[in-house]
Length: 225
Image (cartoon, rainbow, N blue to C red):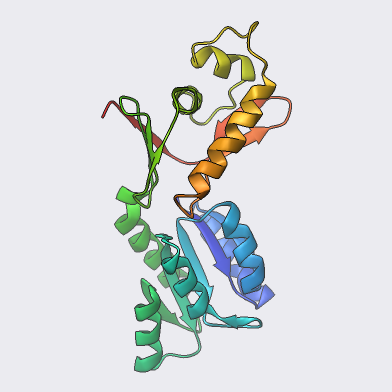
């Protein structure tokens, strides 16, 4: 299963493609313009970006080029009515992985998405290194952590797929919940998000669940070194 951002200005086609890919088990977000897409991927870079070439507010190739220059390593599938050799070369030069010509065949698109996802599978994990207190992003950047930041993340990673209460997070950090102000966790997470943002364009995949605690929203691995 891949997280996908679908950028297509034709609402009917956008809905048809999104529905088909969701039936295939993918998580799909959609947008109809480059500006809207940029706002969404600033929150979370998808595993795969599917983008139309010609859009109301610009050229899809410029979007891909912008993402690549910032270090984004998501897979990119581009489709368009432009299918000439020069058009394809422009796309590949900007960082496009696969180029499909309209009309889009849904089965072919699904197969391409699976192939791109398979190629990227080694780069989809965040990794927490306990011995050195380092967080390694899927795109390869390394973020130096404090002991508390490492403990915070470790408590969440040990419970991937579940919401972890503030009390359990505090105890997982080696603190007594009766002596630790749980509001300090929010400040810690804010500092950690800023620290990650200085190093990688990929946002830290930790979600605050109001009134319940925290959860990670991407795959994490843990190693000693």
